[in-house]
Image (cartoon, rainbow, N blue to C red; front, side, top):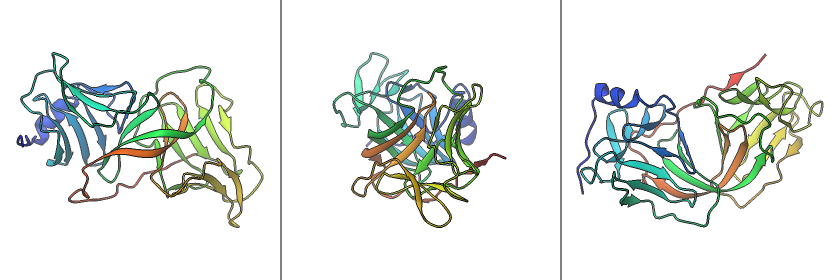
Length: 266
């Protein structure tokens, strides 16, 4: 296997600087050019200039595509058929995840536990129509709710100017902060106190009041599995239902869970 090329902190910083949109998500149709990366806490998933795609925890390599030296100006592309592919400067395919499906919606996520996961099969999307003032957000890393996580009253996900917030009136609302009023609402205001929105491990997004009653549900219950809710940079909230690719296959060494600092609105 090709050896992993370790990066010093200085070199890594230099590689990251050209990519001002560094975040933790790669959408279908998008790519990482040489020197660009996804980041989540101390984890970095980088398309190196030597054509090697590497997952790092700090300066320790956890996984590599083993493609260093197979080209120059290589890039990794998350295709709309679910396949994740590395191409060299001659557009030759030199590595792939082998996850090709029928065309659809797929997303690659560098997760807070250090895994890189490709998800497919959206089971819930709001709003269902394109946002009126469609724009691409300046990305943040506070845009994901993992299965088992919840938004308590006043907590929110953010992505650029978009906010998905569990309000104190028990209403779950999606805002474009530049263009009020809201883009979508659960219409559950007044139905409970100290409400929380919980993405369950069966894929259902539910709002519960402090007495335990469910006051709203996305009605997307499935068999237990891997689910993730993403506030996307196009302003849509999507629940993805199926992980089709995960690296590394084993638990990352030095595994740690990065806590999400939820944004609280007054």
